[in-house]
Length: 374
Image (cartoon, rainbow, N blue to C red):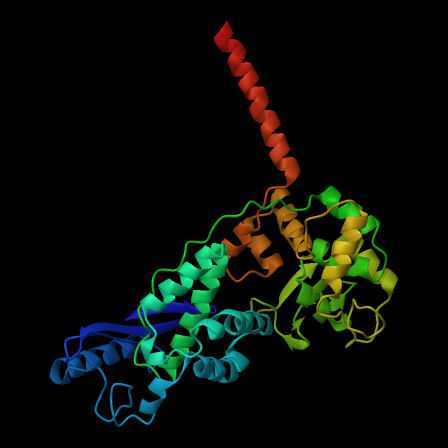
């Protein structure tokens, strides 16, 4: 029995590797029927008893794909395409956030279905995953892309086990290690330069990202009822992706105290109706899916700063908090990150940080060298 965390929630999972009666390797892996530790351990003992007496961890009359009496036994012949459709309709619509669902759909439609869509679910194994991964390597895909492909397919197989289309998740090869990328964030001077050349209403959207750390979808979803100018705070309650409103990425609301400059911009705009968006292309209108990204490229180019995205304004916000000496847990709360490790990945070095470090390094080398010559 293992405690695992999925989307911030702890689940007790039973994992029993065993040898089937035909001599092949088998594995029973699923969430415990009752989600508390004592009940999970009791179920584990019960299934071990069945395994010892019958050669299977499945109880008498309990449906499993290894049983010919299972109502879902014929579904073992589902193709990956058929499984993907069931997965997105039943699981994706209820368990995935809109942005995550969109990302998973891209992986399924553009990569998995064209390559293994006709493969039978029963034939899916580690060798299939290795072949897919090798193809991505040949194409020069980043490790993050390779990981995403495996994560989606693993999630689909987990769903198949959950609805008893599979008795166990196939043994996949280890996930590719995440590759490190060199990322230099916008400095405070860069942000100021971009804001100075950006007209309203785009400027307010840029300020919400750079001075409050809102994600693109959160900028679209912020309503006037969530802004309290008297108390100098705003509450991030929802995000809009592809026209669908949902809770923020972390799943939780968060309070962000207002920066003086952002408060002045909000006050100048004038509060609208409580259920109207704070920032948009017009009164009561919501930003389109790509409007802010395109506007940021346009005005950052006008400011002579290129190579960044709208989301980099949020990176600059988080990095600025770290540079001001704000403790990591506080930064985590302000940024709305579910895990502290995510927050720490945002602690990027600005270009000026790198230059200053080399200046100090060069100065120390010069001093050390002079001492040696003496």
